[in-house]
Length: 357
Image 1 (cartoon, rainbow, N blue to C red):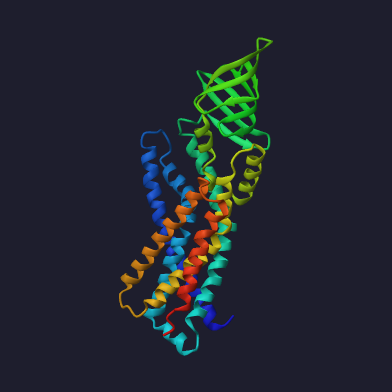
Image 2: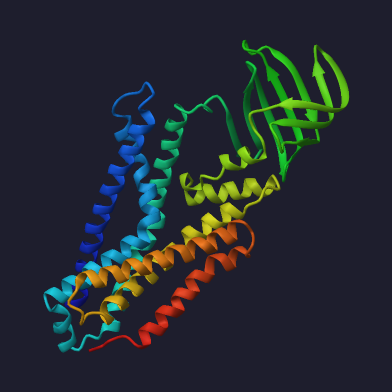
């Protein structure tokens, strides 16, 4: 490795690590305050806020990496400017575009590590965080999971526990569904079998149902079934995809498809994680261009404000297209790739006119 390359790599990684540790410390402190408020009226160990904050912070930091890369690049160039090292590179024949190329390679490498190592780590911690947090939730007696055998629900209403298994979900309807209800002592009360259940509201409408009760089987055109679950609640239970690693997301997608359940949100998360390194490279390029084209300015504050302004704009652009994709107002691939292509074109135009002086 050439001397200047090693110097740039070491300098950028140091800037990145400094910003990373500052940001994760701030997130950790804010999380502690949030958890202290949550546990203020609950009987729990006083260490729970710290413990849960440690578990939830990495997942939040994952969402902040584009911002971290932008700020880290700014601080990296500020150090070069302060020590006049940027001019030393220039006199040695090293062009600004070459510096940006080196930073892009570093950013891509770190980005791949983030989605393969850090994301798996943070998603597992988030999974355990949600499990522990659920123990203190009012909904802790309820349960809903999706696996290769379909949708499974544990529901408790009027001291009766119902185990529900459905092979498919079609909008607000469950198909090929079995419901087994037990009393407080887990004695069997009755079993229901139906090919069509409307779960739009908390009072389910069960059509063409077969009822097994007291060793007697009977059929009914329609019966009503009270539940803590409805279509919206079931969908919301599976919306926290940040607690699933890439492999688990892929498995969940297969389960969703077998249930005829919309995979849009899962696909969005998979593509978001998969394209994350590219997005981080784009942020590094953008920050580099901003710093190099404003290097004649003596105000560090001006440089940082410009960077922060662009990061906020990019955040809202990216969020807008994510919402359009998740609500299916735009095709999934369009919503994922449009911000990346747009920002890449902007960077390309700015690179052509980059300040080499």
